[in-house]
Image 1 (cartoon, helix red, strand yellow):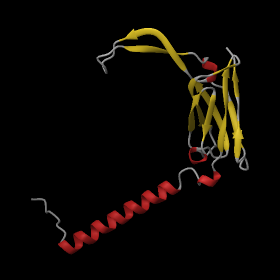
Image 2: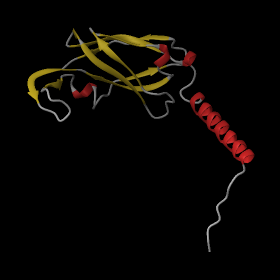
Image 3: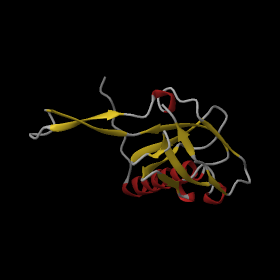
Image 4: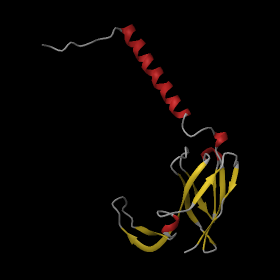
Length: 155
């Protein structure tokens, strides 16, 4: 028994492809509009990061939503001890775990498979209790608007 091949006519094929295209665009729009609330709900957050009373020169601060918080993660570069998360990429109200990382050169050079030139090895110098084992948390209320949150870290 031979399999029969189903073939749409030209008019039917055009009609079908138009519906598939329309459904794809509609589903994508629905998914995107449901992600993370509107920009007016997002909160701008900025502040300083110090380690043993010295500004962290370069690093990263990340805000990870905790269970029950309907917000995407957000983060910002730390430059000269300051960071800022703009409202467009800001957080929605809820509870967040804060992770702070920064590294500095060790002076050791290593060869990698990605480059012909040796790379200077970097070392994380912020204690684990502020990044991978962080217990730092921040709670953002629905009427927060703009927040200034300073992190004074110690060894």
